[in-house]
Length: 128
Ligand SMILES: [Zn+2]
Ligand SMILES: [Zn+2]
Image (cartoon, rainbow, N blue to C red; front, side):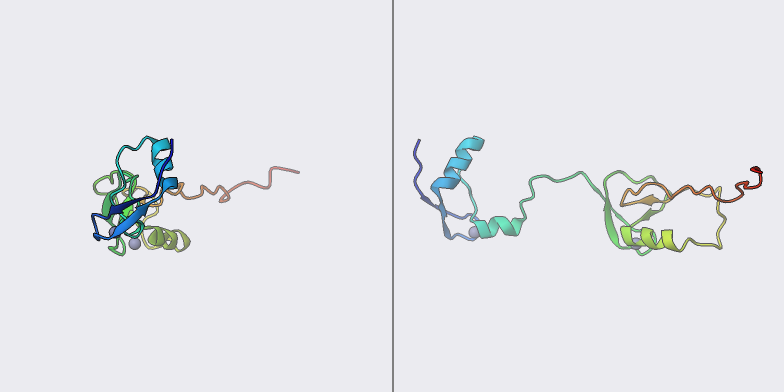
């Protein structure tokens, strides 16, 4: 099978572009039956975009910035963007009650739950 460079017209910008023999071979290997419709520049502009994750757009409960989460947020629970979560983690709000509220906030970054530290009240005396 031999391929030769082909001149195609880009459907986006209308310019001619070369569908090279190498690219044709690649398309043949991948069993793509359609010629490319766009020049490289236009393809880049479109950003590839073949694998779109099913992400839910939502707004951060703290800063209001739009963020996406790879799951469906539960109603009534706060959703934090990555940066707000980091801040929240470093400087936890001390005024609010520590337990028994709406639970852990949902985090866009899907970080593991805050470290469960078990240092408080450990008995050191037991050893003699
Ligand atoms: Zn183009
Ligand atoms: Zn935020």
